Image (cartoon, rainbow, N blue to C red; front, side):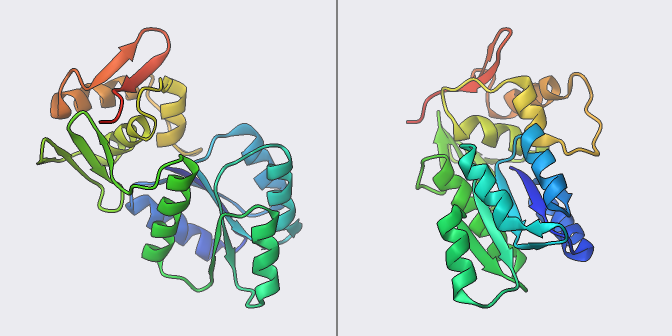
Length: 220
């Protein structure tokens, strides 16, 4: 997943970038409402972690603007506020879930998986297609029951394809999923990851749609 962290505490923001990165996520972080609006308007994210109290305004205003614009990206609130009313307001404005500070990183990662799973219109935690099973919580993949070792980025590409079986994912979509703002992307990076995946899960598992992108077969 590609995640946007909107958090003005630099220690917490850096910890989320590193910690979620170790879980295989691609994470970008901003510290203000202004930068959050710019990031949301120019990039695609699978989920947003949103602090309520920011230096130049309320995170809830950013959330309200997202929903008014039709942006359905899952949003999980990060809040140190203990009052139930604040959490209720956030949920009513359009947040999908919340977690109070301090929090456990493993619980946060699980909540992110849950809100993005619902956002993709599925309930099952395991993705399956054409004999392939992918478990996001364990970063594990099996093919016909045999576990296959994948790199973090190979796993992310496969997960992106399996989240929307039968749907073409463009090279740009996959690059956005894998690489953050500060990372340099080689011109053939996606092609290399697809080649490596095919060598591990079967060459016919991923279809190239010339000029458009890649897709994986429908669920069964």
